[in-house]
Amino acid sequence: AAAGSASAAAASAAAAAATLTGKVDKGTYGVNVKDYGATGDGVTDDTAALLAAEAAAGTRPLYFPNGTYLFGTGLTAQSILGENRQKTVLSYTGTGNAISVITPVVQSYHRRLENFTLRGTGSATTSSGGGTGLHLDSVSAGMFLNLYIEQFSQAVWMRSTVGPPQQCLYNTFIDCTFSDSYYGVRLDDVSNENRFIACRVNGATRGFHFVS
Image (cartoon, rainbow, N blue to C red; front, top):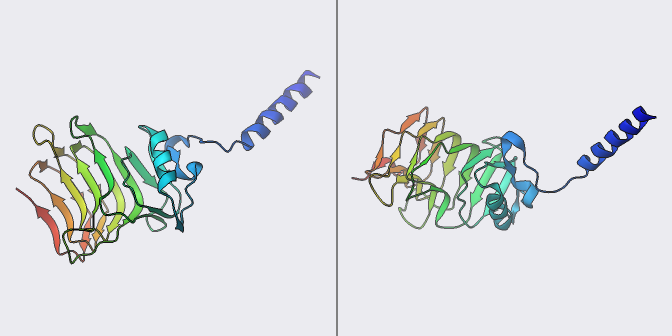
C-alpha cells in the first residue's frame, strides 16, 4: 500500500509539473521569451512581451527560440542567447539602440550574446536615422559569438559615455557578420584591445571606423 501511495503521489506531482505554464527558468538557457507571451511569428509586435521577460530575467540570459521577433523599444538585457543564427531573428523597428549593454558608471564584465540575427531598418547609405544594432557602453571581457547584424546606421558602436577610467576593453567577437550598415563597427577612443576573430563586414560604407 505504501508503494502504491508513493507511486500515486509521484504521478500526481509529474502531472502537476506537466501542466505548469508559468514563467519557468530554462536553466542554462535563462528566461525563455515565449514564456512571457512573445510569438516570434514575424507579424505580431512582441515589444511588451520582450520587455516583460527582460525585467524578469535580472542577471540571467534571455533565451530566444527560433522565430522572428518584432520589437520597437530597445533591449538592455545582460546576455541574449538565440537558438540558431539563421532562424532566430530579432527585428528592430525603432531608430535608437536595438540592444544596449550599458552600465556607464560602473564597468560591466562578461556579457554574452550568441546565435541570432539582429535586423534594423537602416541602410549603408546614411550615417544617421537608422539606429544602432549593438551598443556597448563601458563593457569589458564580453563574448559575442555567431551574430549577424544588419541594416543599421552602425551595426556595432563601442564607447564609454563617461570616458576614462571606464572603457570598452578585452571584448571578443567570434564568427560575426556586420552587414548593410553605414558603419560596420564604430569604436570610440576609449575602445581598446578588443578582438575580432573570423568576423566579416559586408556592404558597409565604412567597415571599421575609429573615432579619436
